[in-house]
Image (cartoon, rainbow, N blue to C red; front, top):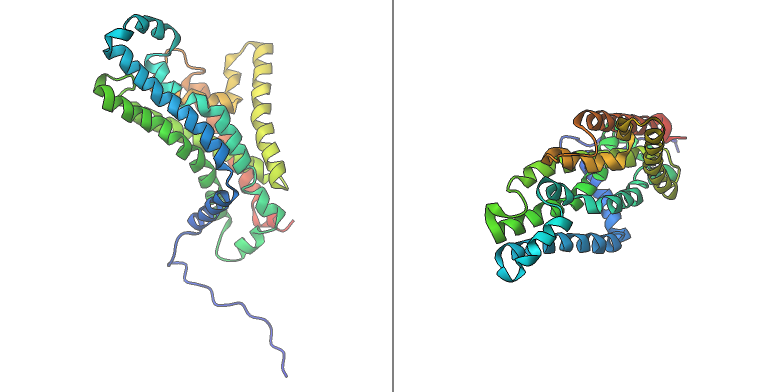
Amino acid sequence: MPIYAPTLPPAPDLSHGHPPALVLMRFDLARLWRQKIGRFFGFAFLLVLLWKVARIYVDHLLQTNQTFKPMQDFAKTILTQGADFQADLLNPASYLLWFLVALVGGGLVARDTLYRVRPLMYAHPVGPRDYLLAKLGFASALPFAILLPFALLPWLMSLILAGASGPVWVTAPLRLLPAMAISSTLMGSLAVGASSMAATPRAGIGWVLGLVLGAATLASMIHGLTGIPTVQAINPILLAETWPQLFVGVDHPLMGWGPALLGTAFHLGLWTFVAAKRTMPSEAVI
């Protein structure tokens, strides 16, 4: 019998179906759901969110109930007010959120490297750009989705209880949502860049935590030696906390607009470039 050369199946019509990047993001979401990693973090974030909502209710009682009137001045001295309070809606969850991003984002690319999945993806029909966009999109959407209730629920609670005169500004979501988007993109790009340099998911977690804590330590050392505060712009933790302060107009933010823009652009460009290089087809077969 004649032996015929193996043939590939006909290429599918790429004009139908969902974009490859969205399909990969759906797979990452399904994997995260199966891991059930969000139970501990969900409980912790829920406690922080309940504290924020309870703070709105306590502030309403101090303003309206005459019984608590003597405590109003004392509460103003120990609790943040005005623009500081608006920015503080997102800050308490920042360190816990970084840890979650490290646990989830550290394995996004490293897991595919460990099991050599990318050559199969790049065979057809996923391209390197689709793959990178999917990983960056998922890693950035996760912290944004977690921070979203912290910006909307206190704002909604304040509107229901006190209307426009409540402790949360009516325009707070318009100020906090862009800050959340920038901070989440910063977290996602760093996580994907660090994961692309790791060979295993556990190593990816170490890479993310090492880069975040290492950059923060390096910035603190240079600041202490030189006395130049702008070097804190290389600290991704401070950058993520600075953007809400800048958008709501805090009197004394952690850093100004210039250092924040330069530091964020540096991290976004560097880690996106690293991830793009480490996920090229030539790297997928190593």
